[in-house]
Image (cartoon, rainbow, N blue to C red):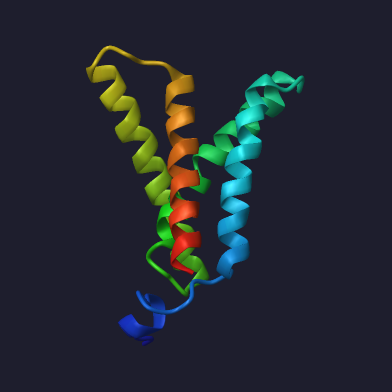
Length: 123
């Protein structure tokens, strides 16, 4: 049976995997994704890019703040946090009668950029 020591997977003081390059990539991807809805791309491609981004990158940006060293655990945290953020934002907007899918997208972009910038300032 395999045991996992807490020090093997999460480090609050150590360097996160990917270092500054990953954080810069997150921030640049947020800036790039701002233009996707306005780009003259086929509709299906725009939808695919937006859905893939919203379901991965915001959670990855927040998950990197945990300094997870395990690739599988980091991927799981990124996907789980992204889905949870989208659901919470969507439910909140529905509750206040301000539902707009583009607002959910913009908030996910903001979370990703902010998480990446915080991670950059910490490294």
